[in-house]
Image 1 (cartoon, rainbow, N blue to C red):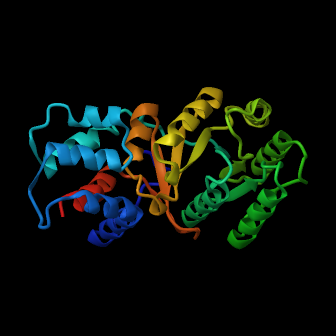
Image 2: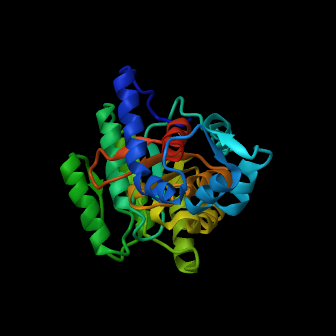
Length: 308
């Protein structure tokens, strides 16, 4: 499991809070599951066809459902299904988070409306809470509103930001942000990019240019390219993710708005088909509404909804 910071143990309270977070994030998915169940009371086993229908309706792709269900008996226990669902996350590569370069440069990418700006604020808040210094780069120069929104968050979180006017060179913003981070001995440099569709060749070239310029400003930068996916899009986000991965090589995924969708099962497909780690999930608009993705807690929350 990827994490910049190892969590300090706070006993059962922390585990309960995290579990509640995933249960909250999956609330609409679980409500949808409950509507599909034809039995009223809690049961230890559920028939194969019902489980298959539940997983498909939660927006797990049919191929992944087939993979998960292969060889399971006609009546499936919670533990049997848990083992299969957990295994769907095993293909995500392990990321070495030791001895991070300083500054550690993160490039945030994704289409308009996915929640990039809010996610940047959440990451910033998390790093600051761990005693790290952060600088932001307003690299989405295509929209004046994006620059303004990120500036508001920088002010709220009391972190520096490098920005320019709408229409200016976004790669220059990235370069200046990294250079400023180096000069000021800052730990994390988070650079926003314009929301872009993979079909827009000019924006694809712009993204490629930013990546190249980052490497000129700091050797090895960007050290991490994070793709922000809108959880409400479900499986339809996979094609989008594959396109970005082909362009720049995505290192990890953050899923937003998971609380606003009944498509929580899509996370299995996203991780398994892309073979990329889901690093964080977010619900809500507050800076604190971000949690490290834990496959075990995610699956357990989902199973609690199925077998309750």
